Amino acid sequence: MTASRQTRAWRTTVAAAAIAGLAINTTAYATVGDSLMSFTQQSNALVALCFLWLALRPVPSDGRRQEHVIFLRGAVTLYILITGIVYSLLLADGWDSYGLGDTLAHVAVPSAVLVDWVATGMNGAPRRTWYPVTWLAYLVGYLTAVLIRGAITDRYPYYFLNPDTVGVDGLIFYIAAFIAGFTALGYVVLAAGRMKRAGDAGIAYRPESEYAGPQ
Image (tube, rainbow, N blue to C red; front, side, top):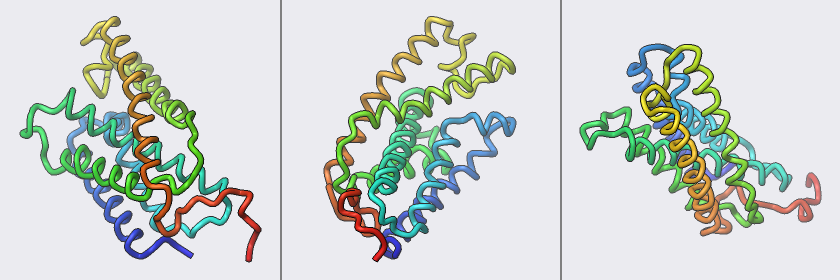
């Protein structure tokens, strides 16, 4: 059994949009390393992989595996929303900054992923208040990798992560603000996922206690 045809088509389209944005934006980076260290590229790659998997996977019957899927969907939703918000607030210079690639990566894909998350919800899965804190692990790892690479190569993907540009105090401020803001955003994402408790064919949560094994 797989998710409904409409759901699979929708998620394949979202994945295709993320891939298109990735392909277009790759040409904007001076080196492959710069592209790989871009959070925009990473988050859109995660969307592409996650949504293709969601579109193609069979429906699991084990509640624990299903909760893992919900955790993954929430994490990807948070990361792509961060991409859109940070670009809009700190990087974009008005609408002139939004070419096709940036519109896909920073507007269309984040909006579509958020719609998918709100529309399908967490499907009755129990509220896990530790989800947003755990989702931050990827961001902490990303920041660590950026700073280590920058210290070695003097190349930083964003000005606000470059201590030579914003100073050590500025860097600490930005990192602290990001951690606090993204934690709050994670709880907003979690709350948005609770707006609809059931619905999407193929991803409804089944507690382990209700799983009676293969039929």
